[in-house]
Image 1 (cartoon, rainbow, N blue to C red):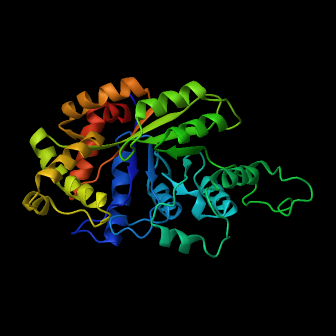
Image 2: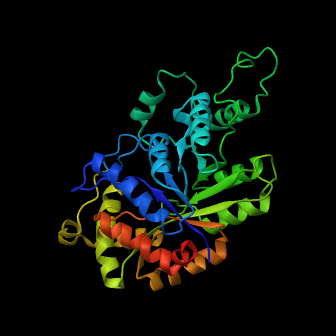
Image 3: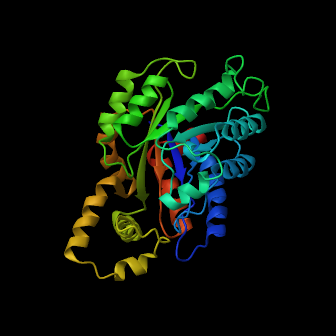
Amino acid sequence: MIPLSVLDLSVVTTGTKPAAALRNSIDLARHVDGLGYVRYWLAEHHNLASVASPAPDVMIGQIAAVTKHIRVGSGGVMLPNHAPLVVAERFKMLEALFPGRIDLGLGRAPGTDGATAYALRSRLDRREGDDFLERLHELILWQTREFPSGHPYHNVVAMPDDTPLPPIWLLGSSDYSSELAAQVGMGFAFAHHFASHDAVDAMVRYRNRFQPSAWSTSPRAILAVAVIAADTDDEAEKLAASFDLNRLRRDRGQYLPLPSVEEALAYPYTDSERTSILRNRSRLFVGSPATVQKTLQPLIDASRPDELMVITAVYDHEARKRSYSLLAEAFGLAKQAA
């Protein structure tokens, strides 16, 4: 069976404040650590009422400290928001504290709106445009220490200097991201749950064009998918009502806390809104474990990921834990862990 992992946004709901959402993330990480999940990644988002965590590195340390087996990483650090030296230092420090259990996933987007992105970077520099490649190159140089003689950073050392950077993954939702990950020879994680680009094309393109590097001798591909599982199809569909309304609002630029099932079911949807919901359902897998596995399998077969990373956003925290438990059983993880 394919390995499973978790992508967590520390989702805020109308009944769960941000501080409680962060504690729920720690509780969920403990839960899936005992189920055989491979890794647990935390996202970086800013100025979103629906997402509690803007600092994945802080959460990584907290979660790694209370788990035993699962790898913990960023899904991801939005590199344009940070000085590469700061990223290098923080993740080398995490790797030193939790050797062999940390991942560094990097994203190109700011993870927020334009004004907030400006606020994040206004005191750093004044570079304009997409400077992700420049920042990625600098991050690598903090690891290799190959700044040329005479460069102002030549004698600057990213501490702790006896610890390497953890494995680097490039995150993306487009063909550009897949080609970049292939060219630099790094792991690639594709965000099927919000991408408009075809996941199969991106994953196959990455494998076909991969160039071995010091970071990886072979392609390593993760497919991130949104899943809501419950004991029955009807129960899962009911849980998914919160997602449907939340996604509809996001499409209008309303990044609100996740509504309750009751609020979502009572919402007076228009015909056009119901059409939008059906369209958005192409990015969500809903049902009993058997149903989810059946609907996911064609995508798995076509895209050939090394690992499936699951994001489950439901209103009730215990229902979310139950969803991950059911998936672990369906994919044989609980048996493997035992």
